[in-house]
Amino acid sequence: MPSSIFDSFIIYLNQEKGFSEHTIKSYKNDINKFSAFLFHEKVELKKVSKVQVRDFLASQYDKGLSKKTIARRLASIKSFFNFLFNIEYIAKNPTLFLSTPKVSKKLPNFIDENIINELMNQPDIRTEKGLRDKAILELFYSTGMRLSELINLNIGSIDEKNNLVKVFGKGSKERLIPFGKRAKFCMEEYLKKRVLNWNTASNGLPLFVNDRNERIPRRTIQRRISNYIKMIASGKRLGPHTLRHSFATHLMNRGADIRAVGDLLGHTSLSSTQIYTHIKPEKMKEIYKQSHPRGEK
Image (cartoon, rainbow, N blue to C red; front, side, top):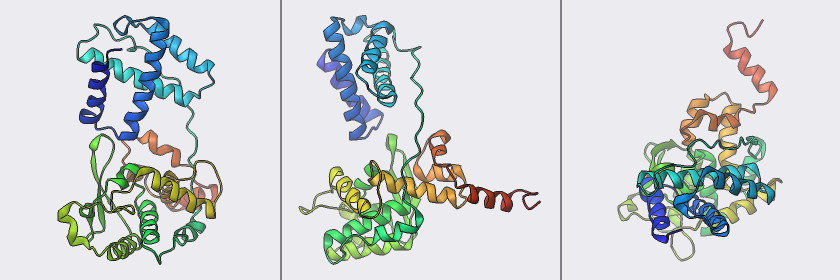
């Protein structure tokens, strides 16, 4: 595969599609796997047909990869060939009529409401790092924002007067999310520890930083939040997404409209939000009685 074509595709994902660094890394990995397969099969990129794509997917099944991973690989390959077709590198798109494997959506892990307070009390707020971590936990749970969105926050992203935070989600789409008083208080205490305040926004300073006063790395947040959650809960893949899932689940359990929750999460499709509709039966009955005209009868 010509390196110039691959590099152009990565630039396209970054600059035109606005994909996150994490997503681009996944695309790179998927395309590199497919490229290695083509090299082994001695097939040139311009001569790829749907046969080779299907053979590649079959080889991934044989390796025991999950349907979710294979579906993502196909999505990456489809995006790549769409790009090649649009720049007229190929005359025909071999992936045009290939269907994506159906992936069953698993219910996300979430933390029960009755132990959220326990989680928030885990960081040692006598230290700057502890204050930072508590502010991160509170803001995650208060807004349900994505990890990448939180990392990119500056002090100026916060509208402290109206308790709103401006984030840039997938595809660089901007949205405003409200946050609660506890999250605001924790952020203010953290800024005081750094000898900063909301008026320091003009310098574009990162809201959350590491020991070197640099924007906090993704892995640092993942590791520290995972450790805090493991202190009060058990389960698989516990981390920042657990708080995002908890945010959505608790809103839904309290009767929030699914479309409103989707907007807060930055979902473009209602189907993405539907995985949070696992409301407890007793809560479902309560909502039914309150909302249906004949619910009491």
